[in-house]
Length: 107
Length: 119
Picture (cartoon, one colour):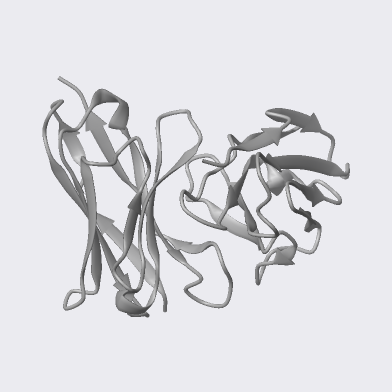
C-alpha cells in the first residue's frame, strides 16, 4: 500500500505568517490528493481536492500544490481560527490512506 | 440539504459486536460512495472502509474479515457491522460521503459516534 508522510508533525507560527505543510506519497498518485482541517473536538472539513482546487467556501488564504508524490498545503497568512490539525489523504485507489497529521498552533 | 446522521456505538467488551448506522438525507446513498473513517483517542484519522455506488466494498487490512459495510436503499442508510471487536478498535467513527456535492474527497461527514472496547 502507498504510505502518506506529512511534515512537520507540528508547528507554531505567528498570526500573519505564511505556513507550509508537506505531504509525500511513497508512490505516484497523480493529483489524487485532498487536504482536511480538523479543529479540536470537531469533524474534519474538506479544504482542497485534486491537490490544488479550493473547496467552495474555504478562505482563499489556503492553497494547495503538487503532483506525483510531493504536495504542499499553504496558509498565506495564518489566522487564529486556523488553529487545527491538517491531514492529507490520497484517493487514487483504496486504501484512501491519510497522512499522520500536522498540528498548527499560534505562537 | 445534504446531511449524514450517525447512530450506534457505545461500550462493548472485547470480542463483542456493534452496528453503526449512517442515515443520509438530501441525496441517495445508492448513487454515491460512502466511507467509514475512525480516530482513536488523541490519534490521527484512519480510513476504514468504502461502499461504492455499485456495491463493491473495500476494507483496511486492520478490519478486514471482522467489519462489514452495507447499504439499505429503502432506509437510505449505510451500516458498519463490527464483529470480534478489539481494544484497539476503540475510536470515534465517522461516515463520510465522497463528492456528495461538487468535489472529490469526503465533503460531508457524519457527527461521529464513539466506540469503546473495554472489559
